[in-house]
Amino acid sequence: MTIKAPSANAHHSPIEELLIDAEADDEQVQQQPPVLKRPWLLLLGLVLVALNLRPALSSMAPLLGEVSNSLGLSAAEAGLLTTLPVLCLGLFAPLAPILARRFGSERVVMGILLTLASGIILRSSFGEVGLFSGSVVAGASIGILGVLLPGIVKRDFAKQAGAMTGVYTMALCLGAAIAAGSSVPLSQHFADSWSIGLGFWIVPALVAFLVWLPQTRSKHGTHHVAYRVRGLLRDPLAWQVTLYMGLQSSLAYIVFGWLPSILIGRGLSPVQAGVVLSGSILVQLISALSAPWLATRGKDQRLGIIVVMLLTLGGLFGCLYAPLDGLWGWAILLGLGQGGTFSLALTLIVLRSRDAHVAANLSSMAQGFGYTLASLGPFAVGVIHGQTGDWKAVGWIFAILGLGAIVFGLGAGRALYVQVTSEKV
Image 1: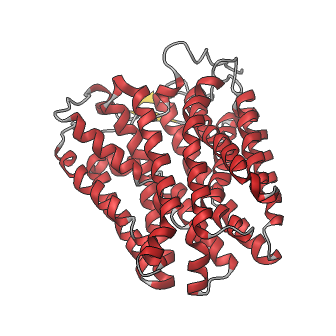
Image 2 (image 1 turned 180 degrees about the vertical axis):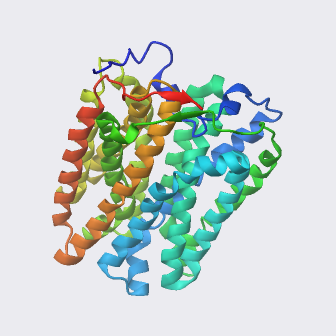
């Protein structure tokens, strides 16, 4: 029997529910909300940590050509370099709630900020081996932080969930945009070295670590798993949500990893290409905040998914094939599309779940399998470019991923629930 979901507007705006608690299965977290002594310090720490969730990814793209030439990387190796961090997002995300229950979310965040900093140093200072191993460490760190941080925000600022969702999203976009736009100028200013452009991002990671340090003294009780959810891997709707998440993410990480190289190949300078990527990422903020609200005005999310995916594909094909004098228009179109695709993917996780426990487990599934799938896109772009010697053929990758995302998004966008329930242990 198919069970339909109730209206998304029955209780809370879905924008307020995009922050999914990775520890929703932990009854202690639900029953003992903390009393914050210095909420401003926690808020500052959360913003600074969120700012670090994208620079290690977006800083590489404008410098990829210089890095490849310096170290003699092939196109396939460059593709692997853009793939590894995304692959690690998926592989290491399931570790986050396990570590949080063992050590506490605050302490895990503190430790992972240090591993992120070490990954940044590795990839910028120790040649080809350091470049690849540091990318793995940085990607794994971001994967764990990306799962834990929304839960902390939702737990500690439950009454301001809507505003905090906006702050969190803004910090993500801002961090990615700043890194994309400034990595090449930084490398040119300091000894014309790509290692400076990549290594600089240890600074915000260490600043976030220092500001976050007081949070490790917080007491939130002894954690124990109180709920479990079974059957997600056998649920077709759960797989449709996961595959939509993975395919739209694959396009997003192709943009993070390869758009500047594509634009440089079309005649832009590295600085110009980085600025275009930065501007496109900033535009994502508009649709990231508005798309969930607009998509839940109707009976389901299928129309919204079609619109944001068509915007994304239009922007991608425009950046790849259209005359360069209209490039900024295509970049804006791309940003509007991709901001909407990502926020709708998060919205679907919430709307397709009966309760917070199902949502937390569906989120883990969608991120774990979805980001692992997403890593294949950047790698395929590197392989195709290496075989053909130009960028025009990668349009087929855009088309296949985009059409796949639409197909699975149409399934995931129906007003249904995944047919699993959470059980008390």
